Length: 259
Image (cartoon, rainbow, N blue to C red):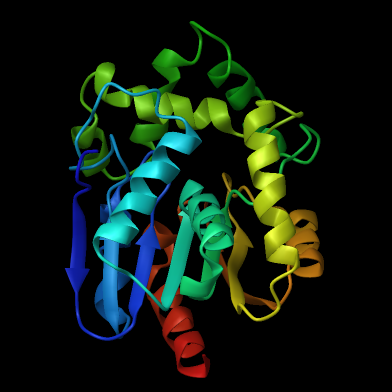
């Protein structure tokens, strides 16, 4: 397997920051320096500075490469901090390696199969188009243009954007794709049955592209064991580490002191 590119700074028990779509470890650049302990942030396979092998870039592919990275670095007693699909990967890895997990932190994370009605209205038609062959490919550029320009520079060609499109088409909406719905339901069962693993959900007042609506936050709070919600009454969009990195770092640091 290819070696993931990653940031590794500090000393102590590891805190691993996992990004989602369409970003990279660069997402955490203003969070990592303000958090104590050993901090690691990988670029998922095919993303950022990591290699781009000829694979399908399914969730299972990302999870497999990530699991090998954890094993290669012999990471134990881990706190995972996940945004977007990074949250799903964190929950999935934790559910498969519970003895190696110290805690989980999520922000705007993909943690629930959703009906189309549960998904924010502003995103419904966008994701219907993204999931449509022929229509979704040119729309990935729209995702990138909503972020700082350095992300667009990471994915300059249609080939480099294949992982981004695959992530978008994996969004669990309306029961599709079924393999993704099943995988999320499996780790949701573990999240509900793991009271010994502290969990933190960091939320903000919603911006125009916020994914987690209040009903979804309430569902997670009610269904996941040992889940604490830290809400900040300031606005952030979907990419919370870009919009409010200081508050995320402050919240994670305070929570770590209580573990």
